[in-house]
Image 1 (cartoon, rainbow, N blue to C red):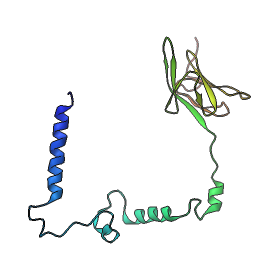
Image 2: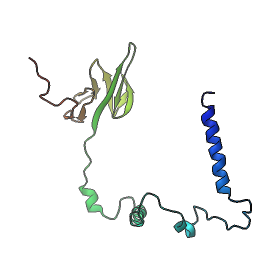
Image 3: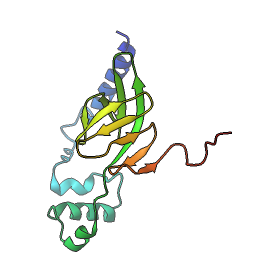
Image 4: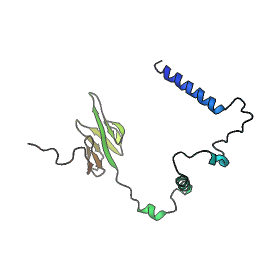
Length: 160
């Protein structure tokens, strides 16, 4: 087993941790520790990442209804058009794979309602009745086909 030393170290650390949590041998005389789920003892357990004010605002936000009480500001938030970014491309003899928005897709699969077609240097996302979205590695393109970001800035490559 190649991971046996790591497992043995893990077992030793768990045994030591259990020994620390169990407390001294005369634990019957010691007061029991409060449970993490006990609401009265919640103030005894430390808050690691947030100040008490930050934590109070987070807990207050959790108690709000799903839509929140501030509906006009929620109406002002507009949802951005979906974007597609080609993170990588792998071409094989029998199949091709593309990584779009971090998701691995094979040639012919469907992503966001579009069929993935992988060429030698680009990926086409096709949908009937819509224009194709063409992605080259590193490019970020909007749902309309407009290039939002590219690895190579326009005008950098010139022919002599």
